[in-house]
Amino acid sequence: MKAPTLADYPLSESQDDSICGPRGVPLNKITLAAVTAGDIEIEDLRISRDALLAQARIARATGRETLARNFERGAELINVPQEVIMQTYEMLRPGRVHSKSALVAQATLLRNEYGAALIADFIDRAAKVYQQRGLFDE
Image 1: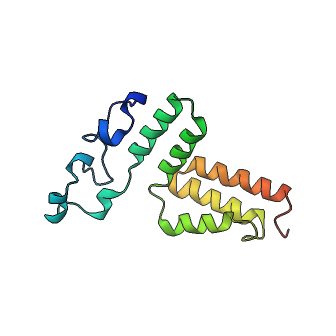
Image 2: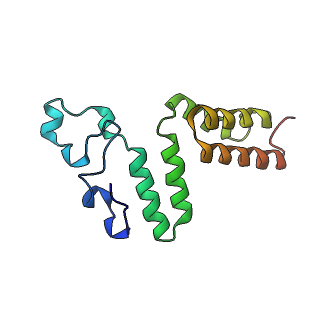
């Protein structure tokens, strides 16, 4: 995929031949005929890491740094199992964990097992804020 610019937005229209799902099927090959023929699997409909990073580049080019960082964090989560994502989400809800160490352990897991450094940093920062606000029992 070529490096996208604002002129390429939306990518689904301008780069439908190079935006691919996790199995490598380009967006322009996902048709009703391909679905009915059994050539398309549910995995082909999931967004890919590359597509999220391309969206991040466009967001950053337009001065939307926060949105760009969100896309980059999303790209990190592509290979994280759904159960781990939901467990992390639940842990981040105030009052769900009783110690800073539980959040730090989850951040370490995401960083070391899944290479999700941006998400891990986000969780580490959340743990510090929760501690400052007295949201832990310890």
